Image 1 (cartoon, rainbow, N blue to C red):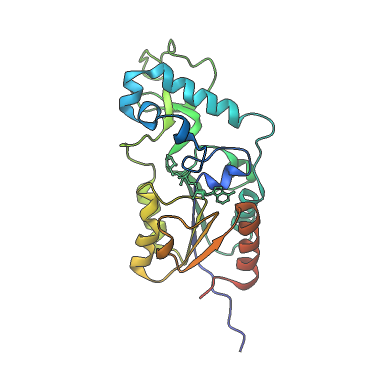
Image 2 (tube, rainbow, N blue to C red):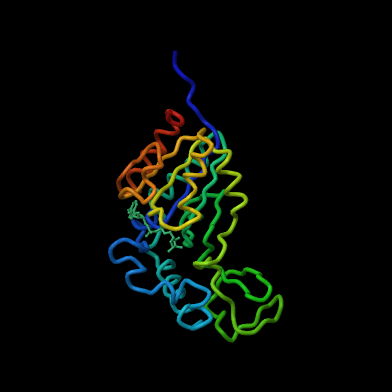
Length: 244
Ligand code: APR
């Protein structure tokens, strides 16, 4: 008796590994960003207070890298956009990444829990605007008039990630949790799989170049480069439904 394919809401978490084959560096691989730059200096509120110019230079360098012509969404980003378009239930994509490659690939239901590289925020009134090269330290906020420029709209260590209520709700309801291209070292994202498994209803799968710190908590593990394993997994989901 053919079983009807299991469907239901899908929550997908992505990390820097999904953008690696688009030419963007990860953080903790060999030669990664944190092997070249001290995260205390550029990814903490204390670092920004100590030397805002250094922090602005760090993020402007990463913006220039992201905006070069050869950095494009790859087959993994495109496969997730295709899954969202063709799946018969909700696909909620939560990314730790601050690049815009998921948007450019066509993903729509997307939440940047660590902020966005191409946006900046006023520390006075919290308004968020698209980044422009002229928004330097002499800029005053158009909304509240606060002088001193706008900070990167990026969640730094010690700050609260964005969208946590919506994420918790989606994790509680999902039938499938996919974790792609993340080392599973930074919370709260690293704890999402445990949150899903607490309910025990959903299938959980990790797709990564190597086993992450949380690998043992996943029911399924698919190792390999994202541009190969993610499109293949999406094809299987669309053909056979959710495993298990
Ligand atoms: N395909 C799939 N996975 C890959 C690939 C690839 N081509 N290349 C690397 N990876 C995997 C690595 O094996 C690693 O497990 O991607 C993961 C990247 O891990 P990190 O560099 O730690 O990046 P991430 O998990 O996204 O970091 C989380 O830490 O510094 C903070 O805010 C920052 O959002 C970031 C968070």
